[in-house]
Image (cartoon, rainbow, N blue to C red; front, side, top):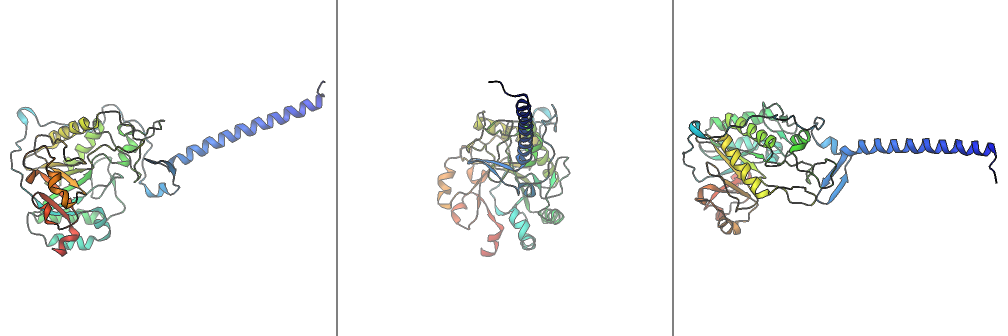
Length: 344
């Protein structure tokens, strides 16, 4: 049975309208996906959407792969121009100042620091996992924190230098949202593919320890801190995350050991120390002027943990980062939170 001409025309119009609506819907869906992508957080438990994310994170630039050869040049401490690093390391007992103390209790921190004896070791957080600097860094890619009083922290660092304290800076090694955002090829990928980087539960990207841009960036920070008078820099979180959805294809242990050796060779100097806060006491420290830091180790396990180290003189080169005055740490180096100063 033939379909009347008017009916065919009506059906054609309906088909054209349906196709136009389909195309418009697909376009609207694509735009929504692109817009909502900025609010997606990838964690070990999967992907979630947080529409408040953009207000929590620092403003970054459009993520682009770095230009080949870009980044600071790394100089290794080798050959005829090698610097003498023979100055002896000593066992340390001191305090550490966290970001939370700098943000929420700065006046009390400054008062306690002013009363410390000369040569007291003090470790201070100077950079966070989002990539924000807590001091006035002059590095080109530095993002200065808006959540702490950076000028006041600059003055605190100057005070500690004037008091001749043993000054230690702590920075995250491979957790860096801002650098990962702007150097995608340096970041650890997400197993979901599509070029996305893995993000931890704090909303931060992690960097590949063997990547040349990563090492160059860390070298720049360490050298700047050394120039500001710090006696030691501790690279915190010196490990590769093992959570679900992490797509790390290299040999993590070997890559970390190689990175530690290269970094130490790049920044070493007489009486300056580069140290590593690691997740495994059996981590092989590189040859040179460095220490191992361990956090969240119960005092009852201090001796057992120290037995796992593979380097000599653990009483000097092993440092526990503690939140108690338990004396079982005291056979080794120990830094306690500055909050405990009033309770001793």
